[in-house]
Length: 263
Image (cartoon, rainbow, N blue to C red):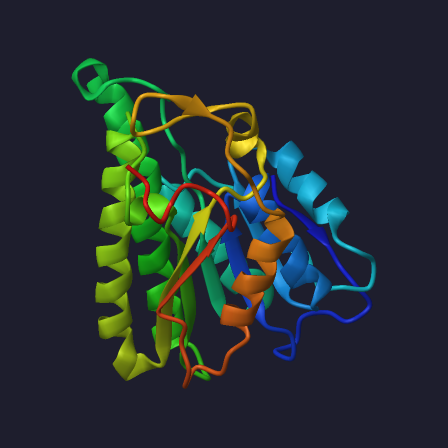
């Protein structure tokens, strides 16, 4: 069921309109709240309506309009329904933050990884990102004024893997190719596409890293994390650039995490 939280100013083309996938927790929640606080109208998409409602409630009063839409990005029919709901409610789309993703089973060697687990990660991280980008692209190409922006949530793993992360790493490398191809194909239509690669933002997914994460040398060591709000502000900066400018790739990470020199 879709729910709407409105402000005194209804969406009328003055507000920018965004879709944030995976908006019920972590980076997605932080980015959605940051955009709502800045006055954006934001469609919060995710699989759990209760966490989407919590995200909407976390935004300060007097900000933008939040629309919550239950959607599994790996299912084409649910993606179509999501973007249809956004079009019906707001009339246009200025930003897709392609954020929904899963790491899959952690710590499983490649030779033991079930095919079903591989498919789940690919369907969510890669196929889901494609389906959402395709739907956003179609709407941005046809709307008036034409154009918009897509920001894909990559990862440090789009550059360098962690041990036992074959499915996650493969999808994040593929996401970089998706970003480049969409960026090229979007040029004639005013569609700017970029990617943010994030390392060790403090979320539920990274909670265990502060106590110990497996390193490339086989040791387990704690890793520093950064405030997820710093990621959200970076996404907002990318989102609010004029369409004539684009951050093609941005890397935001905890300063002392083992990325440069990893392995």
